[in-house]
Image (cartoon, rainbow, N blue to C red; front, side, top):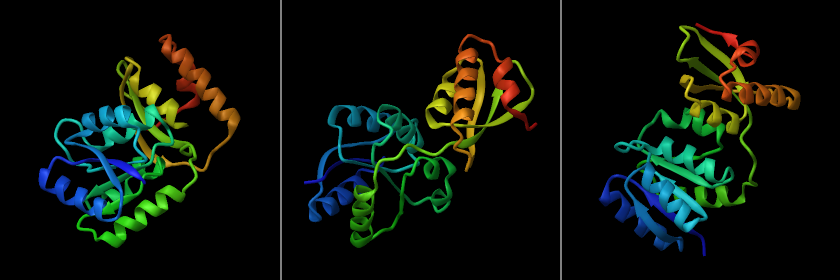
Length: 201
């Protein structure tokens, strides 16, 4: 039997969604109210699927998606949201996270579950990011892998870092150069990463 965790800040939605899942024989292991709950419950239960809302207080669904993907890059996550713009989210598209729009019906839910369980686990394709150093007025852009993006975001010298576009560039040598640049940036040497990046503002 497929199992899952369900994350939403509305108790009514959690109750209704859990009932629907029960009808289609998906076991709900636990429920939570924000992205931080999602990460904690994922670590505890290691479910087959995570269902999460996006707009939640304090820790939102993007927080849940990125931090669960940090734990297991091929974790299966489905976003369930009423936000109509979400289907075009660059972050979700880059990480191969499908979106179910509220309101939804039971057939749509069953199809989303079937589709995600059939998808072979693949690492996210590289994507273009825009970032800014704390000591610099300029913004920079480069193509980077998901793990590199997460590591760059965590550096104390980085003020902002966002995904701006999916990339077709999957060149292994570019990936290795960027990894070397990130390793140097970890030691506060930003010369190489600036050289590999384009100034965009």
